[in-house]
Length: 262
Image 1 (cartoon, rainbow, N blue to C red):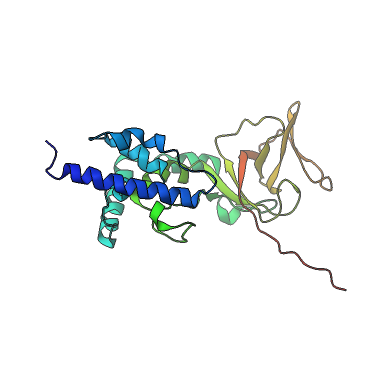
Image 2 (cartoon, rainbow, N blue to C red):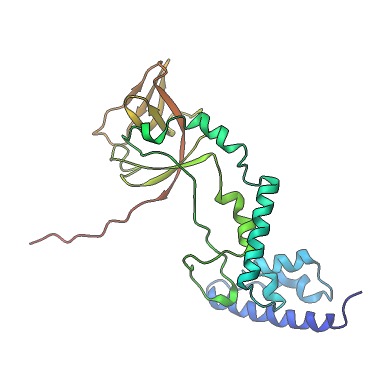
């Protein structure tokens, strides 16, 4: 049986929803919110939880905001963090138990022994969580802002992937596709590249190399995007190893414009 003030809660929630629609329209001045998307939420006297969740997502806010719940305090956040850490460890949500063994087979060179040439030593993949800004919180991204539990749970699969590695490009052999100091990810699962894929290779003598994958019979080649550099021949010996295929640029420096001196 619903509580005595259930109808009053529904009324207050609808007031909040209408305010959030107005906030949404103010933030998206050229794309007004289609109120029909909230038809079931505004008409029902007892909306389902899934209906409330979808409405909150559509308006870029949370169920707690709809229900006028007070923001989480420091103690609440700490408890949620502890609970999330428990779930991660209990159910191995990140696959961390299996990851070290798998990575050891792929990145089988110690950092101290790594020879830098066209990229530096691979690092585990880390990306920034971009928070879903609340409708009432204004616009923009807040640096170092603590993520809410919902954001963390939605982001776990995307943020951590033990099979992705980040490297920093050294030199301009792949310019203009990749430039020196670009940071790129490569996927250690993608070790059967098609011709033309940009791959990461490690050679025990020549060091880390990047290039377009090409096969010519039993011989593999790394072709360069920059015509000033020659292709690298990968013979049939065991001196080199394909570590993976580059999937994206995750960071690239921005150079300021310099006016010529007169």
